[in-house]
Length: 224
Image (cartoon, rainbow, N blue to C red; front, side, top):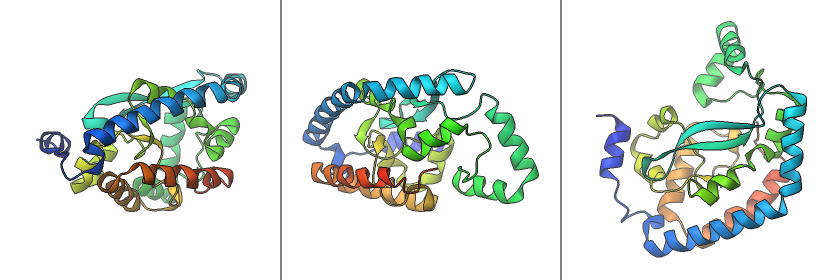
């Protein structure tokens, strides 16, 4: 039995703050209100990002990536496409020819200088505008405004004993890791942030994270 399957079976919400019914209900209500408000307020910006993406790079405007969410349910996480359509081939060539890039990819599953990313995609990433479509994920109940960043099944295997904490949360558009250095930190720090958030969740903590998110976005702190 895989670690993920075992975690799903053993998941117990008692010790995790977010598991309290009042927490889940109030958090979900706030998520819906904020997502609707965000979509209406940012509609012109969403449209602009959509047009720029398809006008400057061949391919669809939206990218869907399969992620693991609340209670281990899989969902398609939405983003504006920031990579070329032949991104897989570009990554393979780089990892085969550049040992330093291969080591960076193995450690963090990210690259500071990523040959797959388009010109507009780099701007969208640094400003985090590529993640705006996730407001629709929030409306569908797949995600929350605040929570751990959504991970793939492969990434979740790196959570070890913290898997249950991650599965107790809806993944968030922003979260504790994003305002704690983001891609400048190690993956173990990311796991620690997610575990801390799950076990210490409160509406007050969500508000603090949202407040800190604004200046982090303005300076593109750790985003790549």
